[in-house]
Amino acid sequence: MPATFPTDVPCVLGSYSEERDSAVLRSEMERGVPKQRRMSSDVMVQVKVTLQFRDQTHAQTFEAWFDGQIGAGTDWFTWKHPRTNQDVLARIVNGALGPLSPVHGTWRTGRQRCRRDATFEYLKQAY
Image (cartoon, rainbow, N blue to C red; front, top):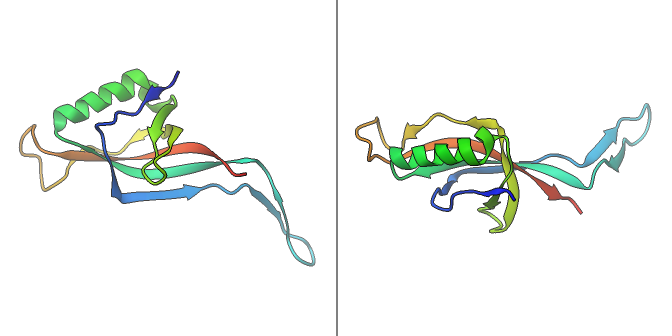
């Protein structure tokens, strides 16, 4: 059973973007129209998000989930897709989390809101 992404960590949609791989193989021809054919029935979709935390303690709680529940980003987890509102099985690309930074200005106290960027990926059935 995969872990569930923490519901108290919002994915800020202002920095959200989504890109999907192609399921098509295109072959250029010496003459004439290039040929295309379907390579697979599924495509990998990458979703860039910004994770927002109430404070540094909240960020540390997320990091504990990241390290303990999903093997520092190697394992799959259930995540509610912010655009479709559907549960998808996702993972963090390369297990990479961007730097932790304050939402406004510079670090002042441990109670300051903070954020970090990440790219999630999931397999979407193309047909």
